[in-house]
Structure formats: structure tokens, C-alpha cells
Length: 432
Image (cartoon, rainbow, N blue to C red):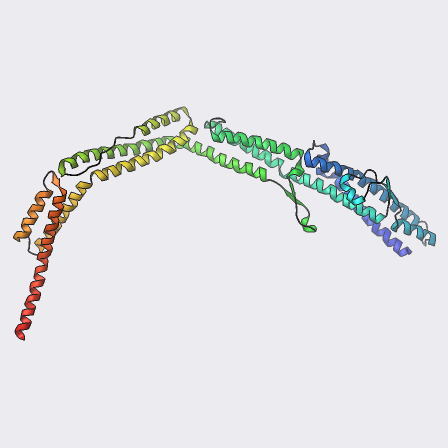
């Protein structure tokens, strides 16, 4: 090497020395490294940190050898301004040759691929030394950064979620939602246990919750903390919180809902009573009519309402909540059933009323056109009216009588048109 080449090599190696020293000092002060050194590790993290710790020791040992070699080269170059040929040859061997002796027996298994087979000592060039330190540093910083990222991302969030679990549990206890008595209480206990287990595992083995980036090159550096278990616990807590809040709403709305239940059942009873009365009227006024029977009130619903009132009085909101849902559906169905029963019972009366209305309508039409006193029409009207206003009324016969009266009126209305047409034909033949 020429003197200029030596100077350029020393400048480059000096810059690399400063960068390596800065990186090692940063690693030394890294919060993740300090946490790893003081933690009771297990699993994958323990395995990888054991290898990384060995790599840290070798990093400093190799850096010391690198420093000594660089200082020796600088001292040799600094002896005189114009180095002799012998000195330049010595500097060339020192800067480019394999003139740095390092111990090789303590190389960790995880780093063997960087060093080859284990040996007690090795002869390396400064460039090989730098490449090896870079490899070990990348191995160590990956473990330290990943563990620190997981510890930063998860334990604090787990603690916050655990505090929220405590708040929801307090609300749950206030409305009687307890483990063994309500599914939401059991779920809160399960979430609490899961979060405790998750936190302990994250602290002891953070790398188990680290997902490295995929691919290759600069874009593949880094990774993400795996929060899937935390996310599942958060979703389960949100669902449980909604269940507890639903029970709390039951507590706040219990009186109003019980009042509505009684009101709906009261209207159903009144409708059934009206249907029973209407059935008696139909049987008395309509002949040969099949009138359906009217059932009694739903006693089971009233018994359940009594249980709901007891739950309300004793504050058993978690039992009152599902019972009110069942009762409200049952009361609405009972009111619909009562109305359908009333409709079915009163159908014959509705048919009679429709026939009466039709008869009166055609009578008014006939009177308007001057046919109300027509003997045939009048006779059919009187017959239909006697049937419709007699008790009991024979609906089938009355319907046939109304139909005959309707046909008579329709035929009478059509006669003037036929007579007018015949007269026009006669006049036409006369002129001809």
C-alpha cells in the first residue's frame, strides 16, 4: 500500500471504529437490554437471550482487539511523515492481512454460522472483524428491540384492560351478576384469569408474542407485537359490559315494563271478555252458525309476573332481565290471540251487518229510479228484510234473499234501456 492508501484506510477504519463504539454504547444503555438482564425469562426468549448475551461479550472482546489493531496501525504510521518501505509493508499486513488474533472458543451456537467451526483462536483481518461484529450486533439488537417492543406494547395495555375488568365487575355485582349465578359473571372471571396469565407470559417470554417482518431487504426489518390474545379479551369484555349494562337498564326500567305488562294483559282480558259476550250474542242472534269457543286468560303469565315482582322487590335484576323479555313477548302474543278470537267470534255479526248494508243500498238505488214500489221488487225486499232482522237469523237464507233482491233491482234498471232500443227500431222501420 502507498502512504495515501494507508491514510485513507486508517480514516475509514477510524470512522467505522467510532460507529461501532457508538452502537455498542447505545446497546449498553438500551432499556430492553437492561430489562432482559433482570428478567426471569422462559421459553424462546430465554434461549435467544442466552445466545445474545454471549454475542455481547464477544462483541466487546472483538471490539477491543479491533481497537488495539487500529491503535497499533496509527502508532506505526505516526512515527514519521514519510513511512519507509518496511513500515508500509507492515501496515499493509496489519490493515489488509489476517493479522488480528481473537479467541474463538466462546462463540455462541447461534453465531457459529458467522465464524465457521469452533477454534481456540482465529486470525482475522480488520474487515472480517467488522463484518463479524456487524452480524453479532444485528443478532443482539433484534432480540433486544423485539423484547422491548413487546414489553412496551402489551403489559401497560393489559393493566388498563384489567382495570376496566374491575370496573365492569363492580357494576355487575351492583346488579347481582356474580360468578356461578350469571354467565356474564363467569365470563368476567375467565377474562380476569386470561389477562393474568397473558401478562405473566408476556413478561417472561416476550419473543413468543413477536411477529417478525417477512420478506428480505430493508423493508423486512422490524416486526409487530402479536396482540391477538389481548384483542380477544378486549372484545369479550366489551360484550360482557354490554350484557351488564343491559341488566342495569332492566333495573332502571323495571317499574315501567311491569306496568306495561299488566296493561297489555288487562287489554287482552278485556278483549277475551268482549269475545265471550259476543259469542253469546251470536249464538242467540245467528242460526246454524259454528262459533269458536273463547279460551280463558293465560294464568301462566300471571304467575310469572308474580315471580317478576318478587325479583324486582329483592333486586335480582339478572333474573328479572330474561324473565321480562319472555313475559313481554308472551303478553303481546296473548293480546293478538284475544283480538283474533274476538274477530272470529263476531264474524257472523259482521256478515249480517254487511248484508243489511247491501240491502239498504239497493233499496235506495231502486227508490231513486222509481222502482221502490214495484210489486216483485217490494216482495223480495220484505222477504230479505224479515230474514235479516229476525232472531235467530239464518245467514245462508238471508244471503240468498239479498242476492235475489239485488238481481231484481238490476233487471228492473236494465228494462228502460231495452224498451228505448225497441222504440228506436220501430221508428226507424216506420220511416223506411
